[in-house]
Image 1 (cartoon, rainbow, N blue to C red):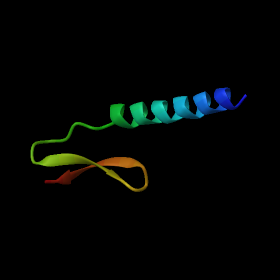
Image 2 (cartoon, helix red, strand yellow):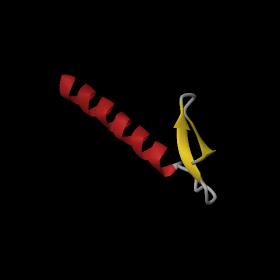
Image 3 (cartoon, one colour):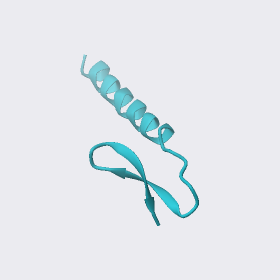
Image 4 (cartoon, rainbow, N blue to C red):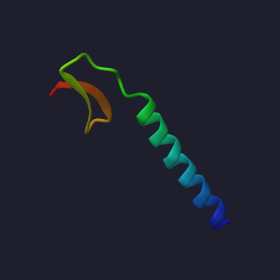
Length: 46
């Protein structure tokens, strides 16, 4: 039972990480993507 729970938690963590990376925006030249605390991507000046 603990193994199934651990696997489920690990799977959710991996899927969240993939979602964060895939939702990264492409920014204009001179800007870079920044992941700010409220869990949103924004483009900020370099």
